[in-house]
Image (cartoon, rainbow, N blue to C red; front, side, top):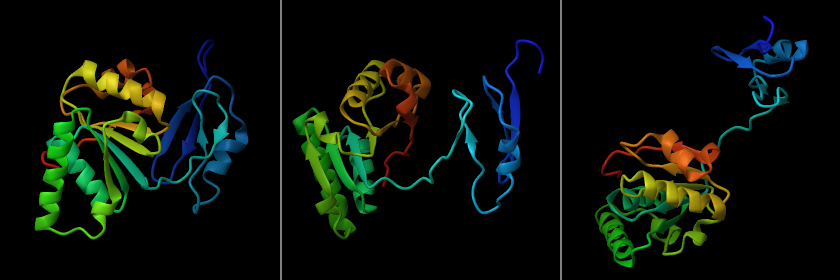
Length: 193
């Protein structure tokens, strides 16, 4: 590397290689260990610290919170409960929450879902989403509203925060929320089920 540039390393992955730029020099053993075992994934190098870390395998969340009980939110909550996840559906407007639950129950009358009703609960309090591993925001397409909801969730729960936006930049929502490192985009088609 030239003067003033950060050292780089090329780490072989299972199917491709990834260029990792760090602020500190990488030990030479990192690149050799990366391709040493075909059974386990190569180590990941933190771009922030330059140290080796292991990324655990991803698993499906056991509990999902959904903010917004309109067509999208109710449909997402329906799918989560049908998939076996404990699901909490939130809406600050009591009438909207009741309509969303009615929509879900009508769908379940047409196509029964074993035990799904027992896995779904509703709330008007965002604090009740604190135990969820994933919280999906399905509010109207307003940047200020989505950022406010996700910002509030970031202070109340330690979950991955997802926005179901279809027209706003996810990076803008994440930045405005105050917790951009926890915000992801998760799009569902309308209607979800």
